[in-house]
Length: 599
Ligand code: DGT
Ligand code: CA
Ligand code: CA
Ligand code: ZN
Image (cartoon, rainbow, N blue to C red; front, side, top):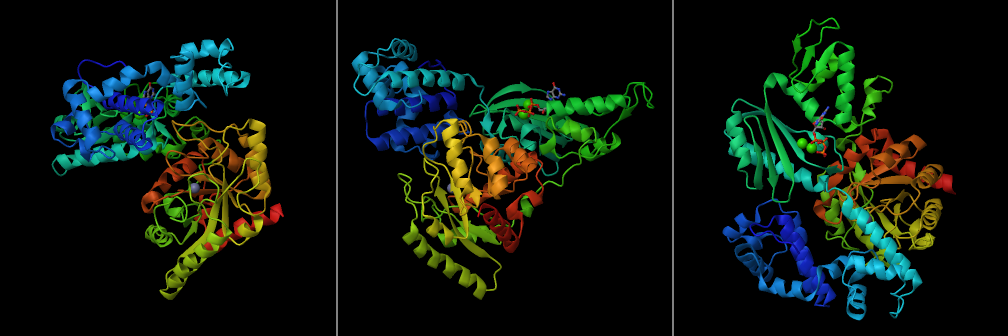
């Protein structure tokens, strides 16, 4: 791999560790060693702090996933520019063989065989050999696998070509932390207002860079403090009222200090989107005003004489001056133009506070880390009045799942918890459900009699996700039409930045959900956000109901509900569109209504 002679960025170190893991895999090293390097790579990729600073403080092992062994090698790498234990691995296995592992369906074993037995050591050589029908001489390879490999190489090229944006689930906590740190290091009152604008304020699922805005009477001091925050790896721009820095994980953060009188226009401008800003500027121009990030200036065509200025301390006041309703940031994308033109009514968007409970989450009965009682306590702490225990059904490989017998035993535990609530006069109900697997042919992982005994059934796909469009769509439709299924879990199966949607035809799926009263999930986990805002909007247009669920696998897993609400708001959803904004009885009545439609 290419290494700069001076300093490694966190990303370069992460790539190097991932390269070590891949080579260990190809050389069939101990599985746990491979996993250790994979984990170390992942945590350094997401690390905001500067590695060199941590190393200087002797704190490399404070990074999650970095133990003494990897920490020592890393230290040598940072100090000497190379580490012998990594060097020898890199010398043994060529980069091109590691690249070959990235081809879908390939894996370390096949890559090793192609390399050892046919001498293929790059993607280019692999493409040529597959195209010339030369792979089929190997046992287990045929014309079909050659075709698959060629398709896989094409897919890979597309993926590598797409520009890198980080998931908001990674960026948002980081941005909040920077703001808190900045405020903590400045004297009380130095910052009057501060807000994160840009795509984060619009709750976009991925983020290019972070835009922070503040009002302060000491801009110089704010700038200096910002540039020296712990997470800052380099300062790209250091102006009097504007700085841009790059964090250890490669994320750029802009900070601007504005005057209080300009706050409204500045917040509006830097919240975007660009399209929304263009539309708002056109609206202003029609009224004789030119709009920029400071405010309005008369152009002399309307009532206002040329050069007249109007400033706004609040964003609301700017919109009001232009005669339109204030538009929530989540709706400031293209569709906002219709809102600005007054053609559409502004919906009363659903809020986090509207959620009364959740219908999808896991416990130690499958792959969760919290007990039934611990998860219920966490749900109650959020003010929820119900939570659906929905562990995976059996048959999902390494995940321990539930079957009829285990569900009967789990029910005793759930009943006991509910009895305690009744005795103590607590308004909370644990429901018993499950996340049943939609098998490859659309049958469910548990028998209908078993499902019938449950309160709320979520059905999802975690296996055979590479089926073609017709197969996977038909498979899903069969599950949706099963009267036992109440909710379709994470319908497209995508993992942000990792795995695209399955080939599923969402239009057909959403229509079937509408016809059968099956609830469409907005899975709030920031790496899923599935369905996304576009499908959620379409679902409501078609008359579907949705549920916002965290799919929590730990007691702190319910904290991500706000991301699901972000998706819902971007889709224009009101509380009425989301089933788990209703109290228990109303929510259950809606689900049963669905069952009647299917029956
Ligand atoms: P990102 O960073 O790619 O996730 O998306 P944004 O929306 O945060 O975009 P960014 O950071 O380039 O700019 C922040 C906001 O500033 C953007 O949403 C609207 C405003 N803005 C930036 N450049 C322009 C421009 O050329 N024209 C207009 N009208 N607005 C702009
Ligand atoms: Ca931005
Ligand atoms: Ca920006
Ligand atoms: Zn789940």
